[in-house]
Amino acid sequence: MINIIQHPAKIGSYREDDVVFLLKDLSEYQLEDSTANREFRVQSGQHYSESLPIEYQPPKAYVDLFWQTLHDYKQKVALCIGIVAEQIYQLKGENTVLCSLARAGTPVGILIKRYLQQHYNLSLPHYSISIIRDRGIDENALHYILDEHPQGIIQFVDGWTGKGAISIELAKACQQYEKKYGVKLDDLLAVLADPGYCTPLFGTREDFLIPSACLNSTVSGLVSRTVLNGQYIGKEDFHGAKFYRELIPSDVSNEYIDLITAEFSSITTDAAKAAAERNLETIEAEFLGMKDVKRIQAEFSIESTHYIKPGVGETTRVLLRRVPWKILMRDPSSPYVRHILMLAKEKGVEVITYPDLNYSCCGLIKSVKVEKK
Image 1 (cartoon, rainbow, N blue to C red):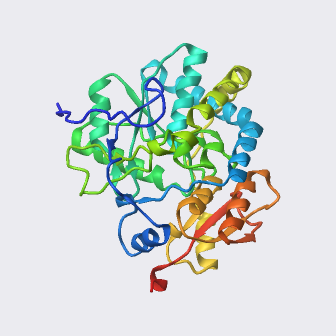
Image 2 (spheres, rainbow, N blue to C red; image 1 turned 90 degrees about the horizontal axis):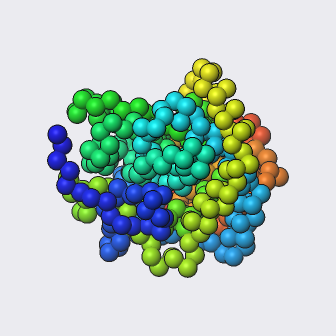
Image 3 (tube, rainbow, N blue to C red; image 1 turned 30 degrees about the horizontal axis):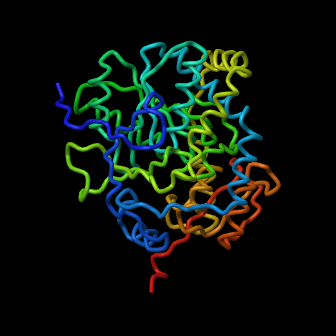
């Protein structure tokens, strides 16, 4: 029996019956730095999880575009949520415990929970926990979930896939957890969109615009990215995050959830049918995205694949919180990339039309190590 020390912090703007965050509240600490300084430190060897970017607050035109995009794609998002929710229900049933990966997975996990509640009158427990590339999953959070739900079957949830780094990290973490504690976990990741072909549990493999990818914490419950820094996180602590209470006036997290939830009644038949068909298929995780990434790495002489972020969601992240170098775009006239073009123009980033791309777009991070004065 593992002794549970930590208890959930009351952070974020979501309702407690939508999600419980298994995170340590680090709101009182100054963890942010300028994008340029942080990028230099990360590229010089500091792990990205030890600090936070300053939250980008977009101009009105960008927020307006978010709302337009949300209304344009709300039914498509709802259908994709319905498909992956039905897959989970058909495969795992009523003992499922939803475990979303903070923070992009959190709104998707809430929507899956809402769908199953609305359609099957089934209230699944839903937690949001941290997983960090090259550092693994929060084992203390897993201990807590398994202690609370000894008969539960954990289903990990994320927003979308890019190269597949988190899918690989999750598989490795689950293997290590079984080796250390003798508990076998299902490492199959459920996502809204899987353009990287990293999992058989997905709503779509189209690299389309997920509205919740457009913003930062203001569409993710006002919770920061997760932090794993030994200065603040002890051996028995959950990984940490900040609650941006000062952004409450700009928060649209619950409006986003409610707007998508309102679409569920119109898509349930199509979702159940698509999920049933998919669950009968043999769908491989082929990690096709890495083929694009390797080709781009060679063509643009990029030092590390960590500097190449494929897909609409990942490209948006590059522009919101990294130092972007170039944006490759399969079709600049696509409605899925309007917000990316707006951000690139605002930040003076070159956009290159690049038709030979499986994704809608790809963000390239600038190498800044040798340019620091």
